Image (cartoon, rainbow, N blue to C red; front, side):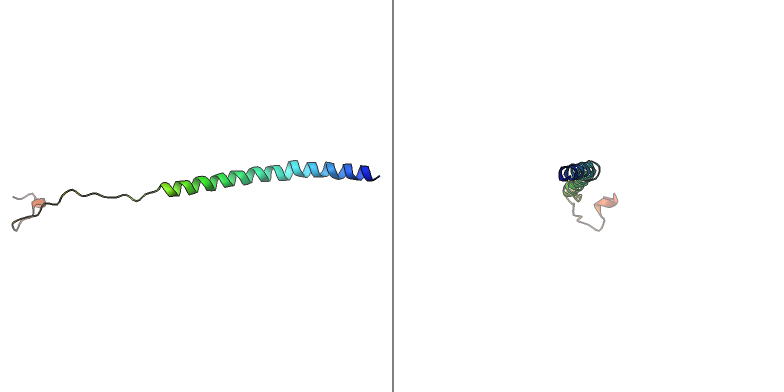
Length: 69
């Protein structure tokens, strides 16, 4: 009688493991990978830096950038 109860409990445990714990593990691994990829993308984002060329100083009243010499 005890061996039959143990065998029945073992079968139920295997079913729970196959249909509940297995998919839960798969989904957990996928969620972890998504977070890992999202975090690695954040580290590669950089602010753009605008470089300006050498500024020419005007010697008179008109500005060189106005196109008038």
